[in-house]
Image: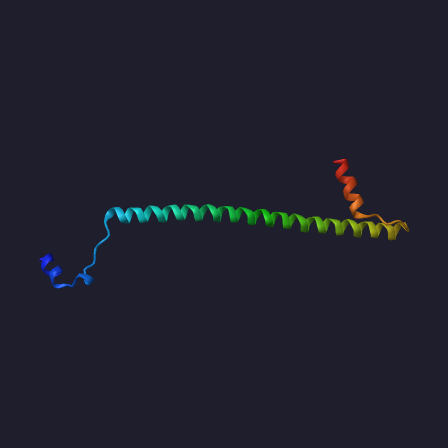
Length: 98
């Protein structure tokens, strides 16, 4: 009966179904591409976390430097000291000691 239906249709309207092998090949290609994309996404997320951590540490450092300078300024005001302590020099000496 299928041959009767196929003979009534013109050759341009007859559809050929995909074979199982063709479907498996396409599936394997899609899985490989998904694996590649997943690897790239994992690397991008890790780079984002690293960047966020470094930015947070820079913000903490800036806040600590500001706090140190304000403390030094307040101490000089209260004691009448005329010298100015440079925060960068204090950082450098602290790094050398530790």
